[in-house]
Length: 435
Image 1 (cartoon, helix red, strand yellow):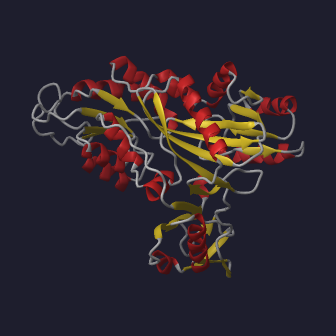
Image 2 (image 1 turned 90 degrees about the horizontal axis):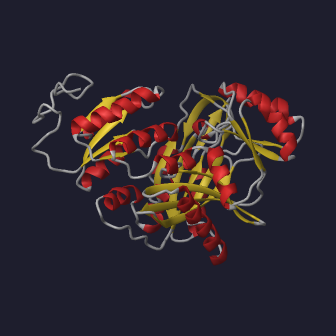
Image 3 (image 1 turned 135 degrees about the vertical axis):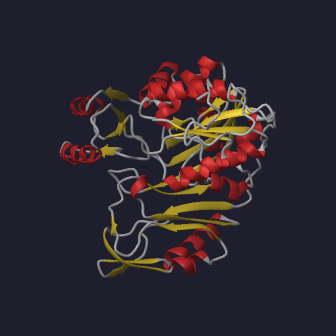
């Protein structure tokens, strides 16, 4: 990649010298793996030159064309080949003069990216810290070793090892595919007959292992968003999670800020920041899921990235803080100030009956409601509405906010009364609502 091209389509990069860098551009150089469009824009707004490494299989051609157009440098790599990805990171970082390599996309390639960054001396976090957040088993071992958030668990290398682990932990248990994300394959195993149901579920994903078998934690679940700077962790906010019915754990919605007592909030915040310190996490966002049990808060899992499911947008609607831009402002030396929330924001995920979609009604009418921030329905006439089994199969979402929790819920109810999908000839409204 020292031929003065962008490494993808042969288009010459202006002002590029023999080593591939642009001497006329004095901005600090940030190389990102899997940067979404808004990350490129917001990093550039904080004064960074941004290079982007993507895999063509992970987003639509139009999306990647948008990233290519925005980024100062763009190259494709095979993210399933971790060796190739590491080589691409090293080569591009050296040729483009990148001083920082950063990854806050999907977890599957994070450790590889941070290991390459460490080799270059361009890391913001040690790879070991990211591994604790990306690997559910490593996280549980760390917590057990530090006597933090005690949870009974056992690793099962393959599906054949799961029934024995279930028996040893004792029913009910939660079985998690260690290498899947987005609620895929997470299952509450409540009685021996659930073996057949669980087997059919993992067959559906074509997944053989590894798994983590954990005691079933009872209590409300929350997401804790943090931003870390030089190893100091600031809680941006806590979001209440609304879960669908068992045995699956598909998120049906989120409410920010979570309605919590001062004592419970302090306990959740303390556990989260103690955990991040134990990991050795130094910089950037973390998304930590916590269940508030009768024995106190317990960590479910954590990731070295922003929360999904539109949680950063809920934070911004409730507090005014653009968490995404705050990452790059902090990287550039501007500390994050976390405002107190002045509103309640929520996201609700639509679930309609499965079957053939005949008609979708009321979407444009709902979008015209002044309090609707976002509204998306994935279903179109002629589609087959799938059964909702994970985050990817949900039928759409709506984001609303209000001056109080009551107002936000009333506004959501108005949206749910407006949108209707006709499935197999039967008009249906979206199931459920954020509590």
